[in-house]
Length: 210
Image (cartoon, rainbow, N blue to C red; front, top):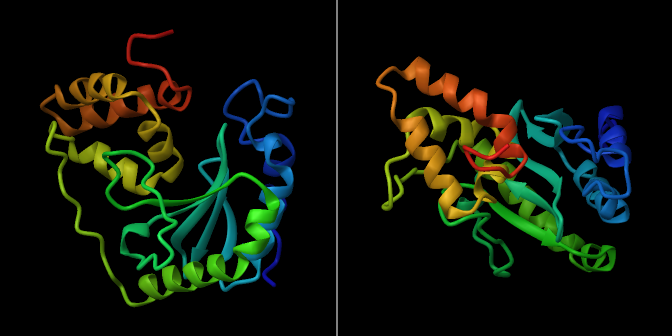
């Protein structure tokens, strides 16, 4: 079993720290303590390295991101960065949002479900590692509804926590941000706008909401 990262102990105990709910009974992480601990034990019993990235547990192989473990209001999950490339013979992977191109989720709502699926989860993890080892790439497609600036696509790809937060926004909120991010002609300005809005996106708010 890989060495446990103490930062993940803090995450399970207190949450990601992005909002004032951290460490309180209302923190999403504290809704799923046993489920997260069981998922963590499965992840540690693999070739993956446990790290904390973007304030959430991230599991890597040869310094490449493979998946993250995260808590949501209605479920906890592991999210595969290149989940779209997994064969998914059991039909259990879910797409986080309609614009998600690469990531796929395995959702859980109770610890017994995780225990029963342990062998399946491990098989999916091994396949995800194999995909990374063989260098397979995701062929990204632009959304047919609106153009998505390259700078935003890069951030969605690089930051799974931000990806999850953006995908959880309502379509109207997403469109508002896309128009705002796409407007500047300079790439640096687009990047700056994305960074300035990041915390608001994590909070689930629209562009003009306080």
